[in-house]
Image (cartoon, rainbow, N blue to C red; front, side, top):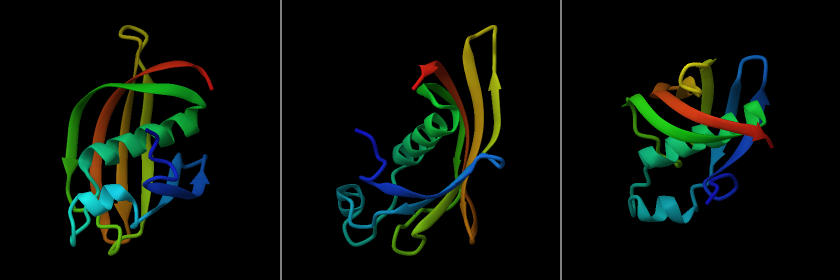
Length: 126
């Protein structure tokens, strides 16, 4: 299931800085289940959101192969932090492995919330 328009919507996209600002949909069933009365964005949803935004940025289907380093520095609560910015710091194709290494961050005005080093298989343009 795509999280776009089910967990978040894209508010803005800056292709020059490889960044997106998303608005979290606090009434999403995901937030109602995780956790009732204290909604928190699940780590897997943070990574899936980054993957979906990367697809938009590259115009290619991106399948997460593995993560080498993911740090959850702050909780993302949609009622306290309704907007989150995802920035893709590095996007480096590796001809040897065929994977694309991506370094990304999710942040808000309060600071960096998540740092991720992710590896993707990319396919034809979408």
